[in-house]
Image 1 (spheres, rainbow, N blue to C red):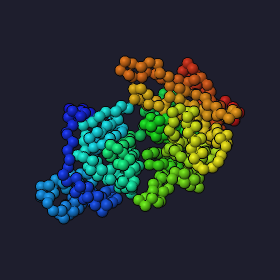
Image 2 (cartoon, rainbow, N blue to C red):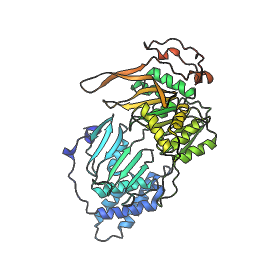
Image 3 (cartoon, one colour):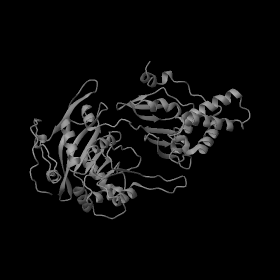
Image 4 (tube, rainbow, N blue to C red):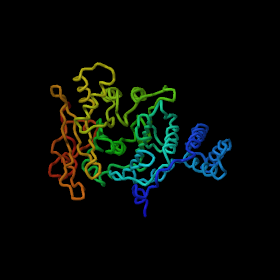
Length: 453
């Protein structure tokens, strides 16, 4: 039986839930050891064997003060706690499986994974709720946070960049909940995304030229549609000569250019102080002489500062936003600008949007679990109180097979964008036949002169 079969064997082979008689003791010793060792547990330069010896030694020192525990039980408890402190217990093999994109722990005995866009139940189990809580405590301790009844919900990340969300009672009525969005070590290029069908060769070429022509691009889509993956791939087209500032809530972007400055927001500490939000980082980045500003995800009042940056000479900026469609993406950014606390007229916000953004690239996860760019949409000028949008490329579904595989492809709408003057301004040629309806490609032509907006 291979790893996939073992992980998805379901409840039929799962061991029956059992109560660990040493749960309280393990919790106490576990918390004491991780508190004492602190950041040394995550020091990548540390010797693994030496660190394990130190952890086992500390655990045994604490256990030696306990009465009523046999020698065999002490050895077993020390080994189990060392595994939990140095790793992630039963989750270790799931984290090591590169084909898994998400791990969902719905309690100690109900663990699911996402693979290729589909959900599978696994046979992986924690001993009990206390065991699960120990792993959660270990994860959140890495970012200097805590989770308890007074603060029962926390966001964190693993050392490799994977996003973590944990919720415990009293907010959760079904025990501790843990969700891990795994960080993909492999960085996809636009060409590789075209091979798996997320984009087409024509849309890849178009997006690469848009980045070189310094168009401001917003990548939109729902949760888990691949926005950060696409942002990583698109950013590869930024020239090496540009000074790039990346701003993220949790560091996930991996740029290979030579001049990249990475900023990461800081959450509140245990005392509830010291928070540095993304908005402050966006403002500060303007003083760092950036050529490009890349905001990993816009989710709040920083939307106003990002739009102002795009409208004050920082062309070619990139960001992502959660939305259901390109039109909804504009509505969400508009709503987030209103969250900034300024009483701005809606028309003024929309004028900022229409002048700041050039392109929206929208992603969706379709029926068969695959991720597709379903629309590449131009943001045009204001007409009355409405921002006009124009689809340049769309993904059209031709049919769905009986086994739920979606057959379709990317097509040009035949419409030419109105921002062609930006390509001419930056000396970036654009194939005018890229937008032909018949899909026939000719030789590259220079950009015709088009009046600006």
